[in-house]
Image (cartoon, rainbow, N blue to C red):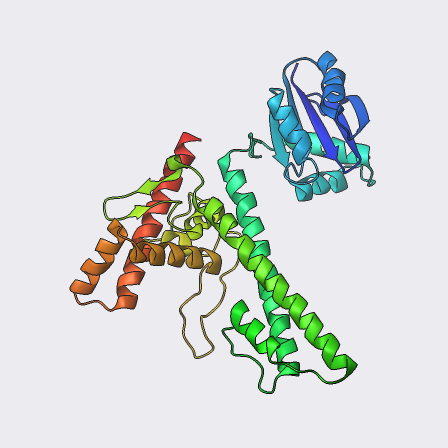
Length: 342
């Protein structure tokens, strides 16, 4: 007998509801989230048979650890979006109230009736890349925030403030020459020194994160006839492989990965001057730009392609844009290969 087990995960507890193919409840369990959660959950599900599928609401959220533990135990799992489970619960005639058992039941029904739901897989190296990139983005955001606040503090300590491009050494030199007056001035300089320390720490922490995200695995190298697109080339190419949605290549002549994602509306005109050129996905555009610039700076096939375009009479911007198209084509092609293997 085929059994679907819906799981409503939370931080401290998990609720599971097993149903048959007629949506009839078979068993229900609520267990504490602790080190033995998987053992107790599997012991509860053992009488239900081996032909069981776990439908977990938001498998990448609060239930991520539970999901990965179930995968390690050899179970089959599918991810149910919370909006789908909520819609099924609200449309139900008798189970519309909001509580954990009803949420688990709605999740199980969604896993039974919606065959297009994504199966959950064991986290691979792409998950590692994603975590490293998120950490790098956090560090960049922290550094930007500290630098902006340091600019404000220097503006209040020095007439005219500091230059727009301000390094830690330059900021330290400016602060050494400041002679504040009064208690407020002294405290303002002290806070500026703390902000400078934050900038230094975030700057020193970023390179290892960037290096790790730039070298995920030798198997991630991407090659084409005209240039080499490797995850080692820049942190940008890692963003492309983790953020691009394969299978929706736009028409020929435009960079595939720079089109707006299907689920989002176009980003709007690039300027308010009447131009109809679209921005596309700015994060992916930035990733492709970093990959292209890195290739041009080093002895790579991409650099040879870039120099060949300049020899043909193109400007530097046009040659770089052509290189980005070739990199985008190579990345898109490899994403299709990965999709076919999956």
